[in-house]
Amino acid sequence: MRILLFTGKGGVGKTTVAAATAVRAAEAGLRTLVCSTDPAHSLADAFDEPLGDRPTAVGERLWGQQLDARLRFEEAWSDVRTYLVDLLDWAGAEAVEAEELSVVPGLEEVFALGDIKTHAGSGEYDVLIVDCAPTAETIRLLSLPDVIGWYMDRVFETQRRLTRLARPLVQRMASVPVAGDPVFGALRRLYDRLDGVRDILTDGETTSARLVVNAERLVVAEARRTYTYLSLFGYHVDAVIANRLLPVDVDHPWFDQWRATQSEHLARIHEAFAPLPILTAELASEEIVGTEALAAFAKRCYGDDHRGPLGPAARLSEVEPFRIEPDPAGDGVRLVLHLPGVAPGEFGLARTPEELVVTVGPHRRAIVLPDSVVRRDVAGAAFEDGCLVVRLV
Image (cartoon, rainbow, N blue to C red; front, top):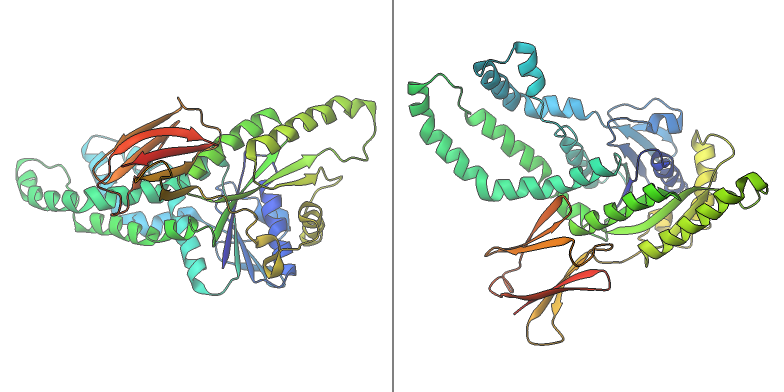
């Protein structure tokens, strides 16, 4: 099975590219599901078909789905929410305020990851295409398996045992609500729902992320940061789609400056994302709505497929975000982390007994070291060809 994640700054045409890719994959004979995890769904508008929370047929071998994260949230989080409402009520919050404050921002999107895992293991589809939320939300979403996994491995069981021991004493001394087994059980079910998602999404043979950009300065700058953060968390980016380029046959002096600006930014895109392939799609003369228009757009974007049976779902690049290899300069090893666009002074590096902690901008990743290198010490770190190279001896 192949999974494609499409993301980009809001308004760049991400949903259109994702839907068109799904249409092209279905035309290639692949059972294809395209689903939206963007809270502001527009996938149904792209197909001009009603879509719900369950896969709905929109063509031959083609299904669409707009995930209702709120519904998943209510199903899986009710015990925790009840506890939080009781706790906030005890603290003096009004009933309506307690209800609103009990919803953890951003947590609804977590449950979309569970659906990706379910679809990947169902055997019902050959290709799963995910129309992700705009870039900031996508990074948060894809970093959650790391964050929650770290908490569950290091804190969860200890916290659960301490709470069990402290609950009788606290309840005798104060009326404050104390989390019970149903609350911890809900947390465990959440983790079990996500367990294995990271392995699926960071397997380059299975999953690729594709960045959709316009030839605009702010859009390109954000896409470069997204590429860096996706690489930090181990996700394989295999292509960039430059969308809405001015058609070559538009010949009018009014467009000369626009064309020159786009050419400049397109050159910057090729430079910034090398060696990734850059696919291009011209600005359409009319709205791209419906499977017929999406199919025509996909042909302009992907051209004539020469990628075998997977068509547009084939892996377009094999740049590895992370690897461990022998150190050619000695008897140690090198940990190589692909961090494009990061300058030597823009990252942080720390070491714990079992992990290497890398910080880039607002994001931090704890990389669990294999047993074969966990006893080695960090001998130095440097940037080489867009990669952070850490020597372990």
